[in-house]
Amino acid sequence: MTQWETVIGLETHAQLNTRSKIFSAAATAFGAEPNSQACAVDIALPGVLPVLNRGAVERAIRFGLAVGGNIASRSVFARKNYFYPDLPKGYQISQYEAPVISGGSLAVAVGEREITVRLTRAHLEEDAGKSLHEDFHGKSGIDLNRAGTPLLEIVTEPDLRSAQEAVAYAKALHALVRWIDICDGNMQEGSFRCDANVSVRPAGSAALGTRCEIKNLNSFRFMERAIEFEARRQIEVLEDGGRIVQETRLYDAQKDETRPMRSKEEAHDYRYFPDPDLLPLAISEEWIERVRGEMPELPGAMRERFTRQYSAAPAEAAALTATRETARYFEAAVGAVGDPAAARVCANWIAGELAARLNRENLDIGAAPVSPEQLAGLVRRIADGTISGKIAKEVFDALWNGEAADADACIEAKGLRQISDSGAIGRFVDEVIAADPESVAEFRAGRQKALNALVGRVMKVSGGKANPQQVAELLRARLAG
Ligand code: ADP
Ligand code: MG
Image (cartoon, rainbow, N blue to C red; front, side):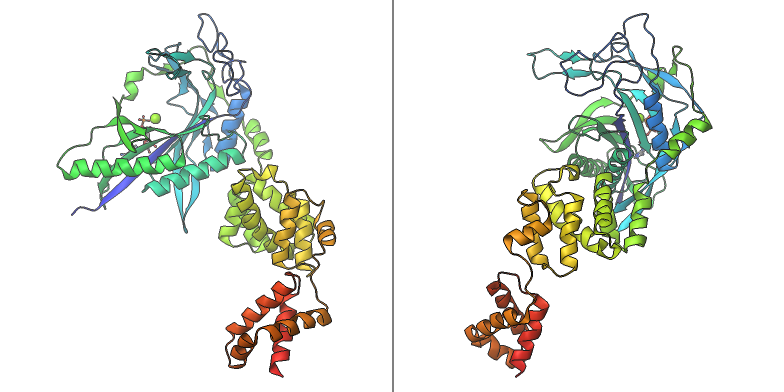
């Protein structure tokens, strides 16, 4: 039986987060009254002329720098001609032969492995309007608010070998465009849209199989399911002796299947030609250098630094650099603790308790009710033994709920200070020894597990406040006698 290999290349449209459109001054804000943000240029009235938005170009440069691509000193806008009701000009302004960015790559973690995905190109273009079908019986409405929104189309080489790899790449790209602040990444609003080109071939074969392009992948989960479905479909066709027809297919999430949308058009169908209304885009070395100077530290570099500077484990460093806000939070907390040795404890709390809580309440870390300084106050009291890790959870909850201004105030108000006074702990220990002769006998018979049970009981009697190490020591001493 033939072993099949799946081959995937992704095309991603990232809406650039400029306030105005790529060729006009109309606003790009999402969700406005239909057609209230479409000016004469966007609706293609005759005689109007496009004026290129510098901010869109600057964002493309940021991307080029972030992926190590080549930033063209001269690139060209072309007209891609096609008819669609939401495209009143009859053509989309895009870049074809001379894109602004070419080459570059993205390192992507896939489980424990890391793959390098080569980028073919990234080019600037304008978004089209939207056809609305829901609200009109038997008719479609046209909303041109989106027409002219700047897009960066980012195209990979066919380097991905499974749905899992494709999703990992898309997630890494999604994190990167937000990190360098060129796109808000909102997938529900269509700010970040992926199309997947999928083919299969016998394992070991060098030639690529015929591909289908799947549209409408508006979540990572759908992307994974669509690619898996499509690869399986193609394998079935080939194993039945059929042939794959190159076409564009639509993913239907409800039915969890892809189905044909249109036959694949070829580049020559679009009659591309340079747009006579726009000069070639010129990007000077000075401009690139100025943008380079304003670039934030990139996630890859930061991961490496966290590993070095705070001896973070790889997975930990990855979690801390999931977003720029997470990294900022972590560094602010470590700075506020003032002791680099406490960095691991900060990391644990941020990747653990804080992340879980944010996730549960569907909050971004920027909106966390516990500030990095408050977390630092908590970590300081764990480090100096004032409270145990368990009590710290209680303090964290209180801070989260706004019950106290900082960890110290909470510890005082609730009397949570760890008990390290051996007299007091001794009394708890005696009480438990008297109440649990069974565990005592087991321990004396040599079963270490019984000690854990006894420590647990003492902790309970002390309301979680006894210093667990001292409890264990005192128990051993008492039971040895
Ligand atoms: P188009 O002009 O249709 O956009 P491109 O040649 O630009 O086609 O390729 C688009 C995407 O499809 C790229 O990401 C590329 O890597 C990918 N691709 C091309 N051929 C294949 C193939 N045989 N199997 C899977 N992906 C492919
Ligand atoms: Mg394409």
